[in-house]
Every structure is written in structure tokens, then in C-alpha cells.
Amino acid sequence: MQNELKGTGVALITPMNEDLSIDYDGLLKLIKHTASGGVDYFVVNGTTGESATTNKDEKWELLRFVLDNNSKGLPVVYGTGGYDTLDIVEHISEMDWNGVAALLSVTPYYNRPSQRGVIAHYTAIADACPVPVIMYNVPKRTGTDMITETILELAQHKNIVGVKEASGDIGKIIDICEKKLDDFLVISGDDMLTVPMMSVGAIGAISVLANAFPEDMSGMVRGALEGNYEKASQFLYKLNPVNPLMYVESSPVGIKQTLELMGICRSDVRLPLVPASEQLKEKITNYLAR
Image (cartoon, rainbow, N blue to C red; front, side):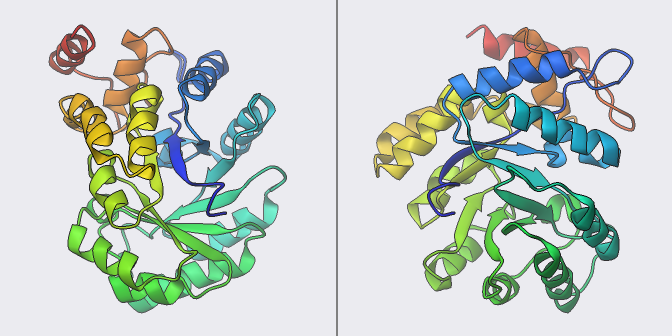
């Protein structure tokens, strides 16, 4: 698993038609665009894929489509998470896991469990899941931050192999990388912190920007893996101006607008998200014209 998920994972968006049905032609273009751009694996049905507003059947259809159109045979990670542990366990039991490398599961949101609750939640998921589990810590979106001790305790579970860390707390990330087991994966969940995270032990990123800019993200991560931080930083500086535009009107609004301007898919999103404003569209257009 260490080598299989080393490098750049793309957190695939879910392209949608004007009527907000899933646009599989657009998804096929995106798969080809990112694979040819050098990403190392796909993440399907993550939060960037609007998993909060796709139903169970759509999630399974999206997974099967990516698996069926994965001509390069890249590893595929499936995302499922939520605030109802038993519902997630049931979802896991109903899944066809054939061809899936790992499960990515975000910490429970809204009900904001204690650290003991987070440990019990992930333990139940890992006990039920037939493939390795990667935890996802993104407190700005969930309201719950997994502390270092929680992550290290859960890392002892035989079926929990890593964490996607998007807390933005470099001190905590250093602490985790110092104290973790050698084979426990720390994966950047923040594109702009990937280089510093990799300098202390992270093995890559699960990236939003890789949807539109797979060559730059992959080049950045490869440079860091090679220990060439000067090379990695050049890609980082190139992407730095566009990164805030991906989130100013909530993700994945910005990245979808970018992909529409690049001719890959439409920018439509499901409510309560709305498409990018004209002001945001203009800023992204100006970046692409550089």
C-alpha cells in the first residue's frame, strides 16, 4: 500500500449536465486528462466529488465507471463517510469492492464526536471494511479535529493504513510523522502544504488542483519524492495564485469552473452549491491566460 498510494491522487470532481444528472462523457474526458497528466491514482466519491449530494446508486455507478474506464490501471480509492457510523458500515457491507485499493473516510461532521467517539467510529469502519482504510481529517469542514494521539492510536489498527491530513497544523503533522509506524501513510489533503508536509515524511497528496493541472501537481509531488525541493517549489509557486480561487465560493465550484474553461466538462453543481460568480470566472480566466 505504501508504494501503491505514493504520489499524486486526484480527488475527482463529478461532472454534471445542465439538468444536474451525472455527465459521464465529461467524466471520461477528466479521467483521460488526469491520467495522461501523470496522476498516480484516482479518488472517487470524495467530498470534491460532491458526495454529500449524490445518492447511493450514483456513487456505485461512478465507481464502476471509473474502474471500467481506467485504461492505465491506476489504483482507485473510494470515498464514503458521514455522521452515522452504522449507515457507513451498512454501505460498506453492500459494496462490491472488486478493483478498489482502499477506502477514504472523512471524520464525522455536524454531530462533532469526542476523540473517544472518533476512535470508536473508525474502529467500526475498519473492522467492517474488506479493503484498507485511510482516515480523512479536515476540521474546517467537519468541525472535528483528530488530535495526534487519536491518529496514532488508530494507526495501530491492522486495517487503518493512513491519514489524509488537511488540518493545516504543520506542528501536528511533524509530530505524527515523527511518531508514526514506518508503514503508516501520511497524505497531504492541502495542495499548498504538500511540499512542506513531504519534507517531514508525507508520501504525496490527494489533490483538488490535479483535476485541472495534473502535470503541475504531479511534477511538484515527484520533485518532493526525489528530494528536489527546489524543483517542487517551482510548481508550488506556479499553482499558488490559483489555489485560493478553488475555495473562495466553496469547493468544488472553483475547480469545476476551471475545467469548464478548459473545455473538459460543465461547471454545474448541485444545490446548495451554485455555479461560480462572474467575478470568480473572470479571475480564473485571467490565471489560465497567463
